[in-house]
Image 1 (tube, rainbow, N blue to C red):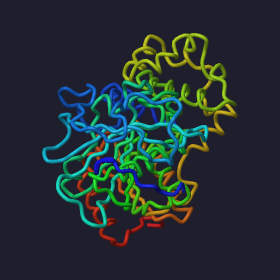
Image 2: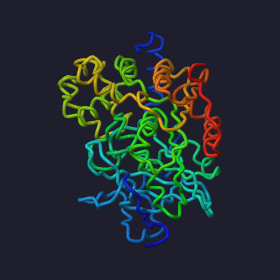
Image 3: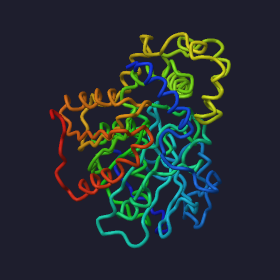
Image 4: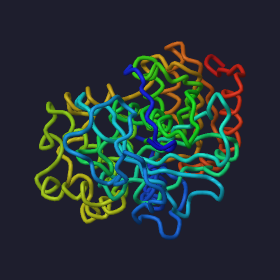
Length: 417
């Protein structure tokens, strides 16, 4: 096996006022094509990764999932290809990865993503890993960030600081099967297994110290990763969790978004995903026949395209009822709201006060739940800041907080403040 790909054996171890709704419609219309990345795809993005080096005994085709899957533990590599695309900063290295994970059904599955690493030699203890969860892009495979060229915010700064960055596509996004959109356990495992996969690439120099972070959908994923880490990935030394405008109060998000036509792409995606993942949920309970006739668009187009497909009629034409008002659906939504479980590391939550997609009031409710559970939570709210802007406004604070966790500093808590 080459030094690049030697595999290490590891043990398995609520509604807003009318003015806010209008603002939500305008905000979604402006940013629905990319709610979470906060970056523009670079020129040439979306093309197949260029393979610069052979990957030893591993296949280099990261777009083809073998059937059956090879045996192994979550995080083990299935395929690996060195990536040379415009978003990779000069002097850094990157790899497209396909790795094993545990699927939403409990069976092994393959998940794709990208791992970035600084150039030069890694320290003996290995580089710390930041595992990133992206925001909503859609459910179609072509929307997967590794394919579409969606960037990790602050990538160059993170690499300059010496971190390996693992960016998961999530289960079923870019790989066969449905993407379990806003299903917490699946998303959390994908984030943790991306960090594990980074550790299987010797040339990345990744160690076992990990910070998980994410925005919007990815904030939801990061919080679940924090809850799952001690039981699912005990070999990882989880140092911290960063959640930016997290989709933590799904019931509030749905109540706010359902009446707004530009938000229906989010609603349709969530309803479709839950109906696909949970056998006890029937799409016909929530969607009208007209909506069922075109719901397959969710698997064919990215978020903006899904929104456009449902833009010719008001949401009342598509929904039998709001899913949060349907008993079985309400139960599933509530079990996918993070914060009720213990997070095995300090948590930083950053939130824009003028966010009309993920409302600050809903994030505050999630914070109260996490604090009541005894977690160490540092909540920071930024005035005059919207959903995408929070990534820029909070960027220096987030980098400083992550550096403190890596250095072993004590984390403050705003619980009870």
